[in-house]
Image 1 (cartoon, helix red, strand yellow):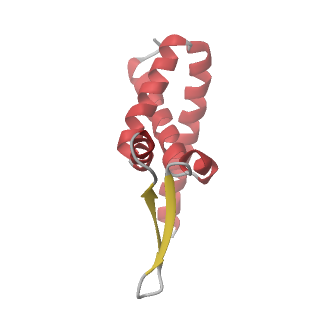
Image 2 (cartoon, rainbow, N blue to C red):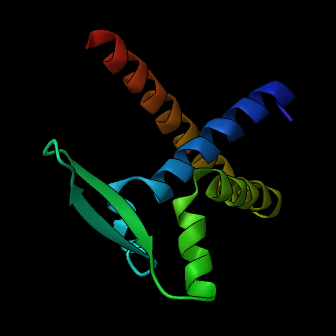
Length: 117
């Protein structure tokens, strides 16, 4: 291992980005759509609020709950990344680096957007 702290940092950023990709990003809505229904409601102030309704029961409902929970999905994404790294490091390492770079860029964007507003 290069440096255990560096590895932990890269894995953390990669897990963060993969989790956000699955739970929030529009590009992966097709993964969530069999398990979630998006419902829009307008409150008395005219503000539209979107929330999700979990579809089905049993395994379908369980996956829907999993994909709606950032913390739950994060555990599974972390496990996936780690196991992939153990089994096929030649594939996992570029993926981890790519996700870590994207995760850090997303954090920078969020911080800069907050300070620029």
